[in-house]
Length: 383
Image 1 (spheres, rainbow, N blue to C red):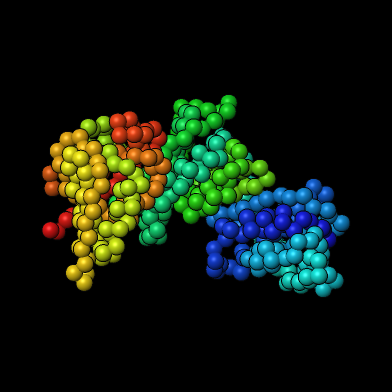
Image 2 (tube, rainbow, N blue to C red):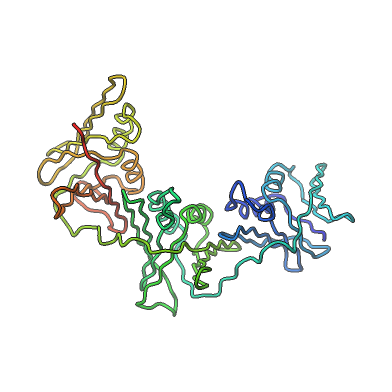
């Protein structure tokens, strides 16, 4: 096997395929990158039984063949090579020789025959705009749980229905929901399709494909091997779906209510960051909403205390409640609008705190698009 390839193109391709691999893999063979050289060019792939990444690039192939080499080491080497064409070949002893300018590396070859087959996706697919999809992922994935004790909560639920795709995530304390257009082509129907995708994998998909034109999303497999594939240009990422029933969190979103406050997003976020500096970790921040302002009050250890107020426009009665400052800050970053509307919902249970609904607001008087909604459960204030 022998090929020549552009250094920048090769480095970017290797970096892409190894990005989804875990830092520590219990099976050494899965730390490899599979490189196939043929008359069509170069194919690079990585797979750890849960997620795979594959891309094709142009290369001059003198001798076709397939090699398996340690992925992260190859990525680090490729990113530091001099600005010159790369030559890769297999020597008589089976070692992999990489030459670039005056730099020369000899790498160990891993057994190709032991590497698992990369998943192929042949199911129904549809298209979403890449920038919309990347933004939606960023607005939702952070609300997924990081606790593997409940696997279904570590994923983002994708649901295709008609001409729309929704993304939902929750960790029991909050729910994030974003809806974007979906082009199912001639296969569009009223029946919904759902897929529970690991939040970590989906986040990488959003970062990688943010500016790739349209993204093709395909669903395939059955039983315990249901997978989803994301393709844009010459890159494809597949992910094994999380098995289990995602909680029916959509029903938690309230009907329209007029009891709300509108606040400048940046001003509120900066004030929350400052005041929460004195808080003990995980302690709630006290908010008091009045007719023309919202005040924050925090007390921590070492007798530290902080207060601050920002302008607000409240419709309805005054409200005092406690909110997790980090969860609130993440939602303020996600609304992506100059103003934010904080709606105070009601509950039939008088002994249970009702969540607040956070949505974009174009101006003080004009609501923004309702494609993004975020529910946050208040914390009990002990004083």
